[in-house]
Image (cartoon, rainbow, N blue to C red; front, side, top):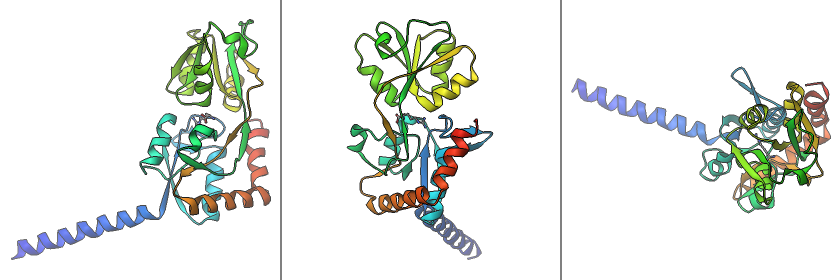
Amino acid sequence: MFKKIIIITSILLISLIAFMSCSKKENKLYVGTNAEFVPFEYREGDQIVGFDVDLINEVAKIIKQDIEFVDMAFDGLLPALQSKKIDIIIAGMTATEERKKFVNFSEPYYNSQQSILVHKDNNDIIGFDNLEGKNVGVVLGYTGDLIVSEMSNVNAQKYGATSEAVIALKSKKVDAVVLDYEPAKQYFNQNDDLKLILTDSVNEEYAIAMRKEDTELLKKVNDALNTIKENGTYDMLIEKYFNAGL
Ligand code: ARG
């Protein structure tokens, strides 16, 4: 008898805990990112920080939503969104036409471009045209990867992370790395042996990605972004991450 009561109580307790953790999950948004993209998202100790992190925290405050970050490989973000492992992506992600087929993007929050990093003593690469016949490092799934992989006679070397591509460049395993301008500039600033080349590549708009069906969330996020742009928060974040000599 006593045994039975214990068993029934434990079953009840377990179900209660399961129920509580489920309902908690319901009202929290899981934010996917790849925290290796300075100054948008990067690690400081075990903290994920950066422009995107502050921006999405501001959005969350406005739409009164608890969020939790999930850090993963960049090329895993879109599949994780589709399979509902995460609910939203903020990762300096360019709103490309191809990606728009699978997800909804918010209004853009930042404009960028591709740039080229080379070794300091490399004088023959001054633009995309000179990449022909060269080994070019890119990061798997980044727009830089998509662009370089489409160029004929360029040998694209794909790396799993930005830092790996840069290490390959420093040790001259590749002749160049094609990467978004802002993180490229950070690597350039921190490494005396690198040179940064600006390009006339197309403008890329970074935006927040959500599932196609989450139209209500999309509207809320866009409204929040507008508020952030209008009330000065956006300018403050730009100042903090781009003009304060980071
Ligand atoms: N803007 C590029 C893209 O959308 C690179 C983004 C990489 N972001 C990151 N958090 N690692 O493909």
